[in-house]
Amino acid sequence: MKTTETSAPAESGVPVGKTGDPAGAPSKEKKEGTVLNVFSHGVLIIWAFMVVMPLLWAVMTSFKDDASIFSSPWSLPDKLRFDNWSRAWTEANMSDYFLNTVLVVGGSLIGTLVLGSMAAYALARFDFPGNRFIYYLFIGGMSFPIMLALVPLFYVVNNMGLLNTIHGLILVYIAYSLPFTVFFLTAFFRTLPTSVAEAAFVDGASHSRTFFQIMLPMAKPGLVSVGIFNFLGQWNQYMLPTVLNTDPDKRVLTQGLVQLAVSQGYKGDWSGLFAGLVMAMLPVLAAYIVFQRQVVQGLTAGALK
Amino acid sequence: MQHGKYRFIVGFLAVPLGLYTLFVVWPFIQSIYYSFTDWTGLSPDFKMVGFDNYERMLDDDIFWKSLQHSLLFALLLPLVTISLALFFAFMINVGGRKRRGGPVITGVRGSSFYKIVYFFPQVLSIAIVALLFAFAYNPDSGAINSILRGIGLDSVQPLWLGDPNLALWAVMAVLVWSTVGFFVVLFSAGMASIPADLYEAALLDGANRSTTFFRITLPLLWDTVQSGWVYMGILALGAESFAVVQIMTTGPGGPDYSTTVMVLYVYQKAFRDGQAAYATTIGVALLIVTLAFAAVVMRLGRRERLEY
Image (cartoon, rainbow over all chains, first blue to last red):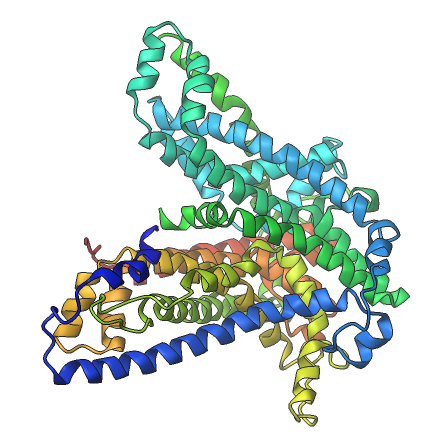
């Protein structure tokens, strides 16, 4: 994954003309290369434009007043109306949605990493009857349509008194994050050397102490990758809270925005809604730009295995 | 390593496995059982009705519509998304200008910039993306029709999500928009690990760019493409299509059920119409479609693994 950028700087040092190209061939080759280069830049820029434009449009719209949103969607805002943002933050309850989301995602991320790494470690490093069965039971959860389970799950959660509670949502998020987490971390624990753990064990450390003090620190890169993957998945989760969390006070960000779209539609407060949308978009985009490499590695790690 | 081993294993597996069984495995098993009952979800009383729900499903026109749409999502979305992503990734990695004395094949300048930008939609929630485009598609004040007016196409002002013939395509375009970047980055990583000698040898032998793509890049990338295909198909049948259809289209489900997909139909039957048993029946059908899709892609795509 690291080799992409190496070609450009390496070239300048190579002596010219020693590659032995016959005189006629390179010019044709070069021309084809140039045409291709222009074409590929053209195509790539168009797509970059298509990706960025809707996002820029949302940011622009969030600073406008309602009248100009409708009359001229693409014009720049005449002035930056920050009151849209403050209205969305306080009146439209965006602050509550943020807080709920932080609580749910914080709790379930920690729970997922702790429980996922425990299960993965036991499955990766110990032989016992049923090991394969349990492993495939976890893996199977990745390809099953979650909606099928959600119908009975609603009543399971309801009977336990966990419906519309933050901790109930946390437990469900953890359960549905385990398949990928176990899959990824099992593979990761298998790659770690056994000798260190054995040495610790010989020195009298218990299995659990070996795990928490030796293996977990060694597994940090894997935990970071799978942690980012789960953070984004849980932060952006929409289907689970839609079904299991219908109390207006407990809404998470995605639900809150959708609800806002319905209610602001009646009130006609489009600018406030766009401010809310952008507010929800920006932290994730900013975090992505800062931790770009880790995010990409975390999200593509599963598919490359 | 034997001392206390089993106690340790049980201690480490009990909580995760218990949680997983309670909230994931057990509901799956229950829902298959419920599909043979007349449970409404509202009252605790129900009785077994055999295959009644399945017979009803086969006579249900809306079910067939939703099945068609889901199949279209599962087949067309990965095809379009992955083709576009392969094309962009190839351009990023091979489209560079040949510099004198440099390698024959180079990536374009600014390749990392493209990859960063293309990845933006991937980190956003699909719910936010769906909301954003629901406004962009608005026929009067939306960004898209406004662009059309701006370039002089005043007569072309589609209703987009309001038009039964267009709504489904408009929804699918949003899913393509939001997932292409992920695959560009994924395939780029794969392409970067293909040794440059292979390209140089092929070019020396007189192969042009499209031949090198189909004869070298694609075969060597096949495993990644295949798992990406399955991944995308499962998303398109499940969570992603639920979010976009439920948020973007009226009803939800579009004018004249034109965008209803199976996963949305399950949700509506269970949580809107109080027909939980029938909902699980459609859910079982969705399960069968998903597993069949994965099996077909894995079977059709099976090739000898190439080592390089």
